[in-house]
Amino acid sequence: MRVVGPAIAVAVLTLGLAAHPARALDPNEITTETLGNGMKIVMWPDHSIPNLALYTFFRVGSRNERPGITGLSHFFEHMMFLGSRNYGPGELDRTMEAAGGANNAYTEQDITVYQDWFPRSALETIFKLESDRIGWLAIDSTSVQSERGVVASERRRSVEDNNSRLIDEENWAAAYKAHPYQWPVIGWMVDIEHWKIADLRKYFETYYAPNNATMVLVGDFTPEEVRPLFKQYIEIVPRGPAPLPVTTTEPEQQGERRVEFHKTAELAQFVSSWHIPATAHADYWPLRVAEALLLQGESSRLWRRLVEREQAALSVDGGFQHALDPTLFQVFVQAKSGVPTSNCEALVYDELDRLGKEAPSEHELQKAKNQLAADFYRRMQTIAGKAELLGRSDVYFGDPKAFATTVQQYEKVTAADVQRVAKTYFTDRNRTVTTLVPEKDNRKTDSAPSTAGATTGGSR
Image 1 (cartoon, rainbow, N blue to C red):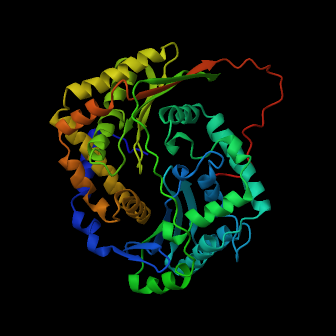
Image 2 (cartoon, rainbow, N blue to C red):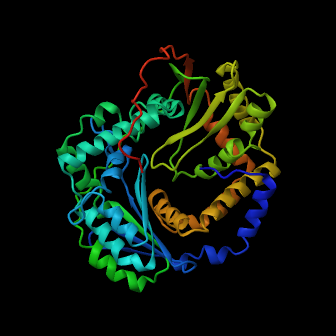
Image 3 (cartoon, rainbow, N blue to C red):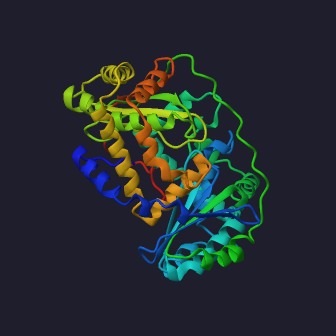
């Protein structure tokens, strides 16, 4: 999620937060160890408040799935809260909340992350809970069938009844022909309805094992007091089989691809996307600066052009996520009533072409860098933000301490770098466009209300 606001406020905040970089970014305070079962442990003491954040990053997401079992990673995001060997359905949440803690989780294409936030007094309780559900999750037909319905309902509500999510899903499916980024994280409905218990157990044993994870602990503790807890509760979890590597490489796109679909909607919208390298690639940093320049806030180039100057669109959004493999840079546009999406497209491409032909000014470049730095330092102000940065740094850059150089990496980016990546990646032949053509709802007004989006439980 982007942080937006006036440029002057961003610059002031950046300068204020950067005034004490050593206190916030001392890598010597971070320790990394590997347990006997392969679980990687990253610890960063922070005694500013008497609380802790424990994040477990499993290296599994939709990237590790295949046709027939798409959506399993997201499904286990749900299952990991239901029950285990020593805790029945709902007891994990109740036990954690009784100890003053809270939890959540999320799934992406490459990772599934489990988050715990709790007071110092709950340290041992949290370790007991995590040990039990990582090592001895309950996978029985009753819980699977119940949660299958929850996930199916979530898909109907959050994707099929959400036009923005739907065009995003269609865009990824069209942009990728070989690589598993082509299917959605939540999975295809036909797969959700037909997962087999044997598939679930094999998937869990392989991908949710300690040797496929990094556990990050940030907050009010000392490494000396928590090492015995890691030994007692986490190291006893059995190691799993080595996951199969993802070796598929997406072939280079040789021409523009277009997908158009018709659906009940008030306004037309579209998403245009371009293939860009994985996060570990050197072009990640200038692409991040280009993203800020083009899309971050109401002073960004695309917002000013489409929404303010031309008044052709109601909104412009987009960007890209961390990725282990080459991913997509996306631009989402919702057109104003009566404005053809082709007009909005032409404006987007004109701005991207301009960035490839004319390097941004030093003032505009520094503004984008200030926005990125401000966002980074905001994250650094909380133990949750620090845990997130450590884990993502370990997964995507191979080193939990790599995040400490984030601002320096942004500062190294030149105007010529931004111009080069725009010219390299934002080309016609590298582009995939998905357009939603709105149709009126012709159903009778006295018909029974639809229950397609009803759900039996909230998603995490």
